[in-house]
Image (tube, rainbow, N blue to C red; front, side, top):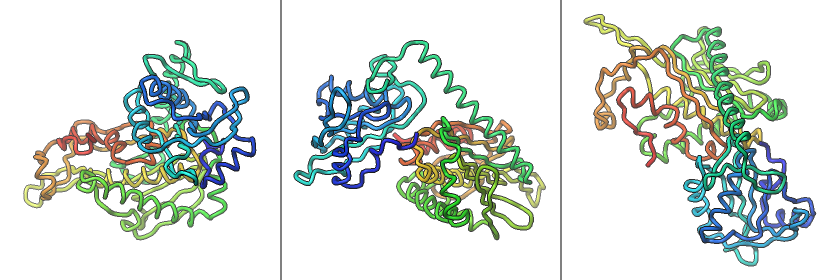
Length: 414
């Protein structure tokens, strides 16, 4: 979903009041206006949970602190509400009263000049594409009202979720085949990000054309590296398991060029391309890294051991998720991304040996071999997920692999 209603574009209180005074701010399928902050009791929390759950199907914004005309839905005037503790309460409502739980993005920086403890709260609800339940009822939204969904609607929407996963799997297969044609080995890591639903196939077209492909990639690379670095620094588990390295440092040459439907950045030299980034005009993205596993021969026994570099794979994925977050913001996409992860040539691999104190604490056997030839995971990430901590998404993508290799659950947030 793109921000077509303008509610997320207010930078100052003056801009907000000017929009209200224009008579152009009105409730719609994607915008709900509330004069007051519900009530602090059980009924108020339930009502707020319903409004947020209903918006989540197609995405939208709930603005609290605006009085509207009940007949037309047009905003009349600002009605500032007390903001202390509101964000924490809504986080709790989204986590405990809505099923499946929701992550929303909130702004409380639009403060009333006459009383800075009050203001307008903006709740950006991601488009998840699946129905959410409050009090055992799935909810949706008509033009301006919240309503329960009937059985046929729920069945259709849940079936669409399965089609979304199928779409991500197809994108993973196609990208893996493409990288194979470009000379990558079977031990490659593939990451894809697909907007679901794909509302605009040209969301990034003007951005890429206006700034020039090379400079656009350079700006995104700098921003993504900073985002990934902050994510690692903010988590003891991530700083312990991830290597702080940049893709450019691992190659002697790189170059950005246009490809059908987007642009690509290739790292490599001597005819090899160990890293690839592709950003599509739709807001989608593809990432590939080669040599996630390598075979080593013991100099004395000549026994061969296939080694999986999990820290390498997870570090690359961390950077890729930060890239996807940057691309989503640049494209103005506020919906859901289908993110796929594929690692190949894993059968018989053991984790890379290390003498680090951190790994010793995990009590990990040195020779735990992976049984399957490949590993694949898919997750649906909202805009709020991408702008939040990266650790929960990395846990969803790598958790099963970490457990299979006897790492335990170092990325699980408790």
